Image 1 (tube, rainbow, N blue to C red):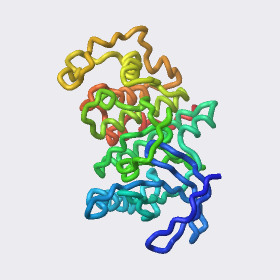
Image 2: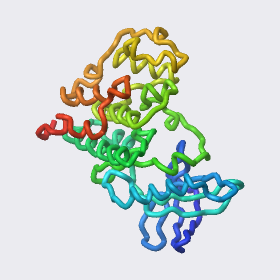
Image 3: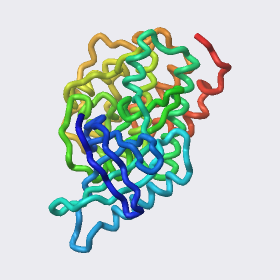
Image 4: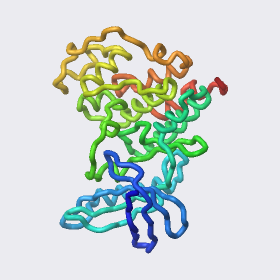
Length: 308
């Protein structure tokens, strides 16, 4: 069992390390015990680069933003309990973000429900994911890395978004794994190296909702080009006038769509309104992609509960 030791904060609260529970692209996460309350928490280790003047103002602004978001106590955002300043390491300051501890992520939750989910369950999970995304977007935050591993599921089946903000921006201590570097939930504009904004998160949510229906990832590419090919095989190749010819080196005519298969063929258990919602999320042009708020008002979430 990997030991973390004790981390003290300026408020003289301490956390006793229990074991390492994850290592991803954005740092190491430990399960620890709050010595004051006795409750389990999740500690994320973050390295913040220091300048001649100390902690950069951009970092201080992000800390203030995280604290401000936390004050809203949004039910679909993982709670941030504390930010602990640790020791200095070369030209970096080690910090620990102290979050509520949630036992499982959505990937594990899907694996544990191998028989699948009812339409009502999928609709509920999807709505909670979108509620969390809409909250971030309304506060001008783009998550950028939404995938089942970054969505936590509580013991009673509620979703909480995790792994955004300070940890994502400043952590450099990473050892990438196949899960971490996955391209499977990335929007086309990211794969093509184009500027991006909030629509990238909507694309990821669309991929995740499909996965809730068919219990496996929708697009499983090995490289950026392979990922785009797999996307086009399912969604169709974008029109030539939609292709950002002047902004990317890869050519529109380098892709050939063979044996196209549609999402409702992959997931025959998907209802028509779910299909319509997903297709409005998985639109090649990010400017034509539905927003989180618009998605929450889609007919899919207005229907009577269907317990099938």
